[in-house]
Image 1 (cartoon, helix red, strand yellow):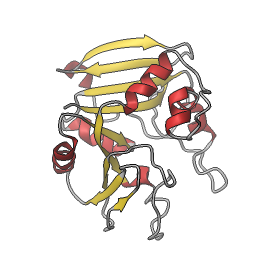
Image 2 (cartoon, helix red, strand yellow):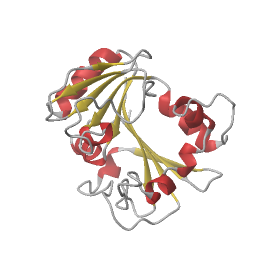
Image 3 (spheres, helix red, strand yellow):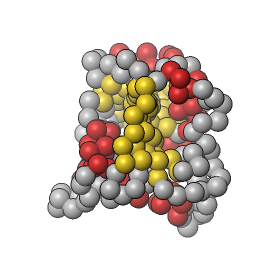
Length: 214
């Protein structure tokens, strides 16, 4: 079992954007930041339910496939689930409709008390007010010999990295400059010394950085 993170970031290291609006809750910059990933065949089939076979192939597609492979549990923050944007909606069930793409137990770190939400495809959202270490122990217990993925948001990711809990970090560095948001590396000076690093450039121009420790 490994603890892993997969993130899209900009050339200037931002993993979040700041141009959201009520009309466009994700913002145009977010669409640009994840464009190569959302164009892949795996994203279109796994997240959008598109069974036509449409979508890009190549290096980005391989990483999109690997994103979903071998995962036995997921950890995410309240913002990634959508609780910050919908704090008073007791019926909120996440951004992903009736078939969330996780298909495994998901542990949401939050101060809001909520009952678990279960979906027919195996996704179960559990809401925890706890530390990263305790959340990881819960996730590892259900993941068995499969991986635990820390999905986000960026504050949760940095907490796990600062505590030395992450075995594999994959960053898809997209060829654009955002200029504002939350930067992946803030407070993590010298963390590259804890990992072996390799890189790979996709046809889209995205640079895939892989930090790994055995």
